[in-house]
Length: 243
Image (cartoon, rainbow, N blue to C red; front, side, top):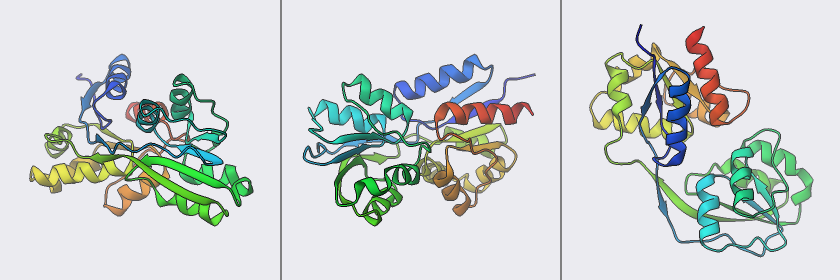
């Protein structure tokens, strides 16, 4: 019996390598298909805020490379993976929400940010749930775009496999990976067949915002892990494959 094929759409760096290795160790055949590429803007987070929010490994690395200092700000991470990278870079993390999402962070900060200056440093595709939620809580929010996320040239091998009925599972790690998958499928003129292929595959999404995007675009969703982390997503998708 052949190994099941599982598509992953992380940026083409150590994150993709780690995910591929994890899948191989679980006895499945990874289909690495980077759907995101990073274009730095050259901007750095402000250093005069009361709270500083970082939402990704890439954002932390760009901020650190720019020599950013949070000053007296309370440093917040969207989840444990981002917190780990912040701490490795020498930043003290004080807030990690119980629920690793924008809404989870807003809920955890609550009334603490009322009247406070909050710096949000992230990509150009950040969810408005975070900035709108903080503003609704009374914060003065400033957003710095550290990088843009674009679809890499040549992406879409997973769409070809899905169209051919040869993809067993797909792990979408953000709303943008959903959109870029469909764009790549359309570019290769296999979108209709790729959609049909996903109906027979296990489709996993990293959290509720990504699930909503997938549903809005007419894709089936089989798995949403309790924790919005890549490890939890892979574990849940593999468990569904084995059931």
